[in-house]
Amino acid sequence: MYHYSWFFLLPGIEDGSAIESFLMVHEEAAGAHAIPAAWFVVLILLVFSLAARSGLASARAQGGTLQYVPAANLGPRNVMELLIEGILNFAANVLNDRDLAVRYFPLFGTLFIYILFSNLLGLIPGFLPPTSSMSNNFAMAAVVFVVFNYAGFKEVGLGYLKHIAGPVAVLMPVLFVLESFSILVRPLTLAVRLYINMFVDHLLLGVATEIIPLVIPSALVGLGVFVSFVQAFIFMLLAVVYVALSVAHDDDHH
Image: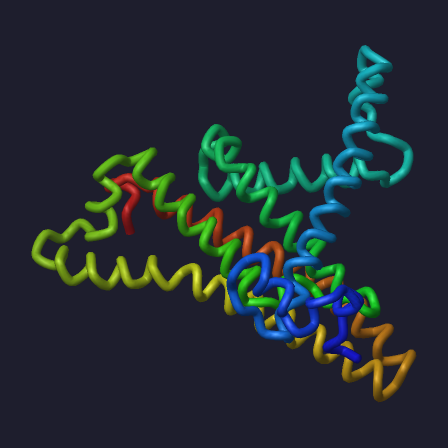
């Protein structure tokens, strides 16, 4: 049952025919759950965000210093504030520029929160995480690829190409080819790393559930929560690092 998803009950999902009909692409049965699962995560995040927004509006309605006092319980507002503040501060430290971190925070914040909730979905019996699908992960990695290259040209201009080639003139042609290849494979390595980790984690949990229905799965759920956080953080971290490398000036090149 570890490869089963409740979304397979929807017509045309398990065999991938629905996805092939609507998107004109073929999706293997093993990854056919990704699109409905991804939309389900988006729905969860939308409801959670609206609840957090409602809590923030209630706090602001109090006025004065009371609006800055955290809620007594760990509700949606507090959770989102912790996530947003933590991600923004982390990105600002890595980029060494808070304004730059704020500018690209929509990418960093969205990646971490979406991947985290997607990973956690896989810990619920009967659900497969969208991140166990290569198509889902590669789509996110492709967005990261576009953004960090855009950031390089926007912040550095044509100096971004010089930055790729390196500071030594005689080695520029060779280094440019090597570095360009390294940049091109970044989306693939991002997607594969997340896919393998989440697929194996869910596979182990499913196998353990079939062997010993209570003891081992309980321990693995805790490990699964930890892995969910770590993998979301690593994906987001690499996105921040790629942007930092792209916007670095010649005097920052090592």
